[in-house]
Amino acid sequence: MFEWLVTPLTYSFMQRGLLASLLVGVLCAVVGCYVVLRSMAFLGDAMAHAILPGVAVAYLLKGNLLIGALAAAVIVALGIGFFSRQGTVKEDTAIGILFSAALSLGVVLISTVKTYALDLTHILFGNVLGVRTGDLWLTGCVGLAVLITIVLLYKEFLVISFDPILAATLRLPAELLRTLMLVLLALTIVVSLQTVGVGLVTAMLVTPGATASLLCKRLSSMMGTAAAIGALSTVVGLYFSFYANIASGAAIVLVATCIFIMVFLLAPQKGVLWRISLRRDVDPAG
Amino acid sequence: MAISVRQSSACFSEPAHLLVENAVVTYGGKAALQDVSFCVPVGTSAAVIGPNGAGKSTLFKALLGLLPLEKGNIAIHGLPLGHHKDCVAYIPQREEVDWRFPVLVADVVMMGRYGRLGWLRRPGKDDRAAVARSLELLGIEDLAQLPIGSLSGGQQQRVFLARAVVQEPHILLMDEPFTGVDISTQETMLSLFPRLKEQQVTVLVSTHDLQLAATRFDRVLLLNRRLIAWGSPEEALTSKNLTEAFGGQVLVLNGVVVVDKDVQKRKG
Image 1: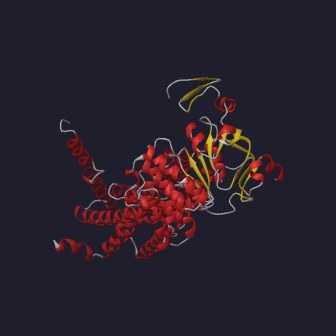
Image 2 (image 1 turned 120 degrees about the horizontal axis):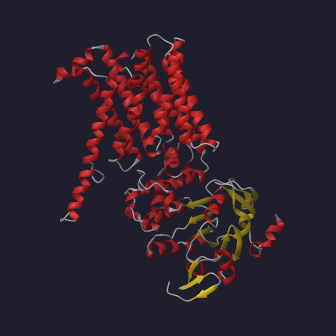
Image 3 (image 1 turned 120 degrees about the vertical axis):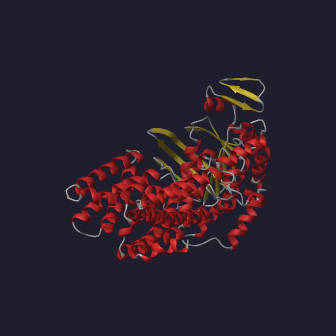
């Protein structure tokens, strides 16, 4: 058993991969709590796709992919805010338009390159085993900055999420805080690209948070629990991917999904089985 | 400004706590409030009465600064809205709150302190003491560690009132706080009014209950997009004013059903 655990770690690409996925798992899970509570899952998914042109441009210019993605993500976050603030287009419509346009632009740009299919696969589904030391540093720094911001602005984000009217009476700059939250989400998605890719980052954002929401009564404990679930999923998923020789991003997401389903069935009070057994207690005939 | 103060005799001798002058608010292209002017003296408790869609919530949102005024102005202590932080507290309607949000009763009440805490500061001993006092005042200290979603309607309403008390506002706005709550919660809330008056807090409550408005409030504001009456319950709740405000709608007043222009006796 011990050997089974240690063997993968003798490869340096696995060490880097494991560290990167742990960082991403925890970061996505914490940010994801707000995604779950504020119903921003569609927005997160859209943003992930919308950064494709940024990645493509960086790739074509032989620049750093993450920096290209970062620039695109921030532009998209501000763009969605801009379109929906005008009030003439509903937010989800604005998101739908922006994200499919950006995705198409990204595909067009990438299809000008010969190794199109392979590169696109890496961007769409991640390649955690190709993480380089520089990427790891960038992921670590950005992740730390995002987490520190979330800790420092905990009570402000709590109020604008739970009670926007109170936020207004307290004269909090709600618009600024909302935009900041979009930027944090964008940063999180970008540093997660390498691990789980554009296609699966939504799962990393939403699944651990949704699982934790079934178990927790407070936002702070929900974030902690989600982080633990995110970390566990990435580690277990990566080992699976190593031994079964399957795509790492997909393995990680499937582990997280399994944990969600177990909790959904078994969680105290909110779980399906718990509710059924409660119903039996109340009504023996049923 | 002097002219509109004179319009309302009650404010003439007292400092104007809350002054609304010729307020016009449009909402979705339609005029939700037309040329509304009134002045609430210090520490008054006032009931805001009107049919559905009369602009009661719109008025409150305008007082909070959430809806911009097309025309006119609102002044608190003679200063424009937004001048003082934490001055106006609001108890939302039940459907405005996401009850599934993972937050404990004590956390919700603590949010009332966030305004005075400011950025980057965590709640301290004083804040926790204020929260505990407020929970006790409303008789819900046992619920402090429960998630907000597990409470009954009346308990939830008490939690939001506790939060408003912790805010120590000058003006407290309550949007239909008695809808769907039990009698004991209603009495707990009403019994706070004298204490709030002592602390010179002005309370504005929107309600459909004309009997409560007639018996438990200093003043009544009758609204149907425009101001129909503003004065003591006897002055405001005349059948002429009620007819003007409610038109064909049916209402209960002292067990009497008011239907259109005729007052017919029927069991409430």
